[in-house]
Amino acid sequence: MENKLNTSSIPPWYKQFWPWFLISLPGSVVIASIITIFIAFNTQDTVVVDNYYKEGLAINRDLSRQQHAEKLDVRATLQLHENKIRLYTKTTNTNADEKLLLRFTHPTLSDRDQQIALSMISSGIYQANILNLSDGIWNVALLSSLSNWEIKTRINYQGNQTTYTIR
Image (cartoon, rainbow, N blue to C red; front, top):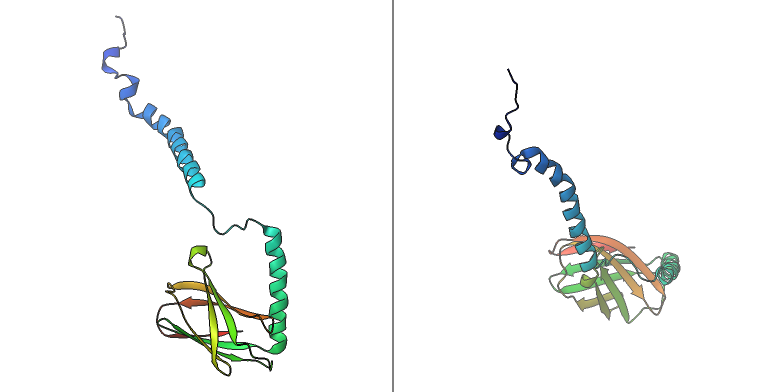
């Protein structure tokens, strides 16, 4: 009696599950790497700063402006209603600015950033129109050019009438 292996009942390798499973593991890594390279070359990171040295110097300048605001005890209440901004300021400084600069910066999307010049309508009260401000987290900075101070805060804007305090 001869014991022969019946080779006609075993299908070829390309019709079996396990070779394709083992090929698919490194194949999926190759496809994911190609997709990652494509995304890296075709998108731009807006959070990274090109000139970090100048940004570092600007941070130091901002800190001195914030320290000056603390000395003057500058405080502001910001009211956002539809497309209007009204700002009420309180300070120990007797020199009142005719115009203040209000800066809205989005934490990750720089194309949504806005700078708004506020005009004084009466003593300590400023007003301006605002462009469409989308809902979400915003960094808000109020700057004075005449008195050389700056105050900052972070707000969660939800599109309805809201009041925020800036210190």
